[in-house]
Length: 100
Image (tube, rainbow, N blue to C red; front, top):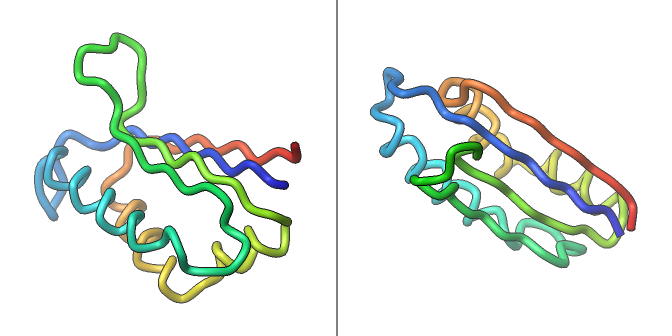
């Protein structure tokens, strides 16, 4: 099993809208990816708590049955719009993949 966790911090404002608008759009885009490929065991999208002093804005906590399943997810054509959107809306991104 491969755990794939991604944390994002969003810009306050972009050409596509406010931080809140962009977070809403990001959640919608990610939610559409939950069943893109066989082998997704877990797919949780969550917003950070507004009152937390040290947090990111958005997290994807996911698990895949194999590296091949994760690769298929990342290369799926419907995952492309997520990458494009995040590139313009995100200030920073942190990702960790590990086997468990």
